[in-house]
Image 1 (cartoon, rainbow, N blue to C red):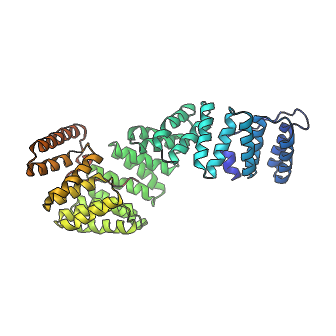
Image 2 (image 1 turned 90 degrees about the vertical axis):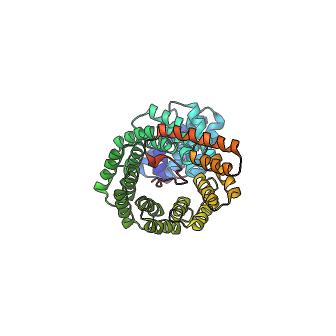
Image 3 (image 1 turned 60 degrees about the vertical axis):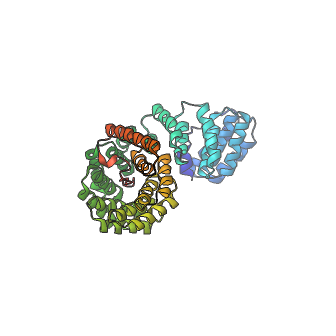
Length: 419
């Protein structure tokens, strides 16, 4: 804990000796005793510092910092709080208090203190970085973005800020900017395989598969069992249509770790795209066995049943996927198709409308719903659906060049799981 606190609290303790009884003097003695390994002596000196007048926000903050170094977190918190009571605008005390609360898993109050520190001292890299990192780690990458951008603007030499910025950009879908951020991170720390794998993934996403594969191979050159690198190579194969290469990479990954549900799912996709449906079904079923919550595997298994004409099994898998993930637009669409094919038009309509509500940008559900409305005699409604579907299709075709990236195609969304 001492190492973590000392690393997180980038703090220089300035010792100004005014008299033998000042807090600064006792803190200086405590600092020297800590360096000498005399923990009890340091604690005794800090006790003297706590009793010595005059108490200031700066002295209370330094005292809290030294107590934190000595693993006396509760006492440290009390001094940070006292520092804030003495001077609510003292940014360092807010920052130190926030860091201790974060490490104690008190995330909400920690973020509040870090926000205050960053607001009071916007030019402090550490305050900006740790606030952005906290936002990211509590599932709010959009909120993290401007703070992490400020952090790298303040100090462009810090790997953690670039790496977290890349992660936030990746999670918000800005893969081009994420590639730039991860490239900075990898340049600063070439040995960090996690950052390099993230760089490889976003390069593949922005249609630079050769560069992505090269980054993955750089990882494998010194770590042949790095499954993330192998999964990225498999993903590149699927994105470029080299399904045989994708299958090879996924099988290599599973040879290293056969219990990864995502790898079985992705291998199933590669096999399915090679029309090896029996083998694909086996992989999807294994993925579900390993991770019953993996709704993509249920959906894709349902698609393979649909392809071989087993519509009842396909319908059950779509219903299971929706039960696990009610917002799964593709599953609602595919269930609508299956219900239409079985003649249950009235049940198909709400599924297709739900697919449209969840993803109004995909043309397929509009066209299928248009067909049903035409059958039921609603010409105006049918024409409206066909017109919208046609417009969306033209818009997609003007943007997307790869058929693998055209969303729901007859209910089939083909995409491996991100690694």
